[in-house]
Image (cartoon, rainbow, N blue to C red; front, side, top):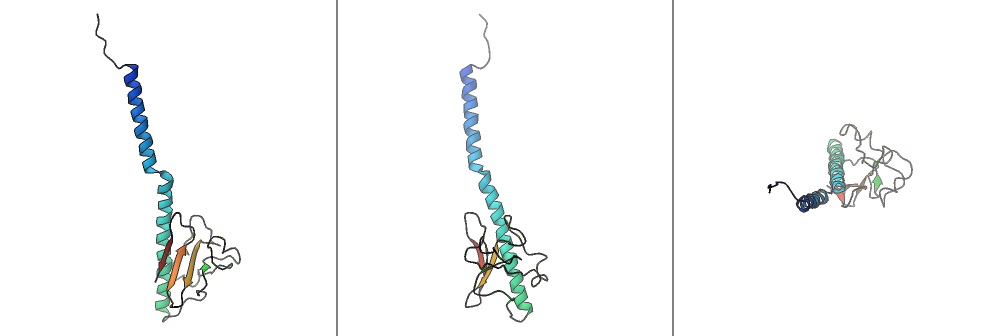
Length: 148
């Protein structure tokens, strides 16, 4: 009688099943759609901070003058005359074009990955105490806004 070496069918199926369970576990834990959303939100945080820093640089360079157009009513940044209230709930219908005003501080006004130059999906508002808030209207799963 010869002694045959090898794996049985049951052993092979068991190993394949374990590998499949581990693969599914790793894929679910990585959650690529969440990672992509986190990446886009990270960019939004950076853009909001850059816009607010540019606005404050303008204020410092102009002896405390607030850039024209920033008021107590929220406005989306962009060049469109209408439709700016669709992405930024609560914003006015007309966008606020700050590309010329902030040209010294920003090469271009940042545009959200879901926006276009006419409607950037970033908004700006000033409260009664002259604290300026910039927010990302297209944030995924979180609120992204910075006030100074």
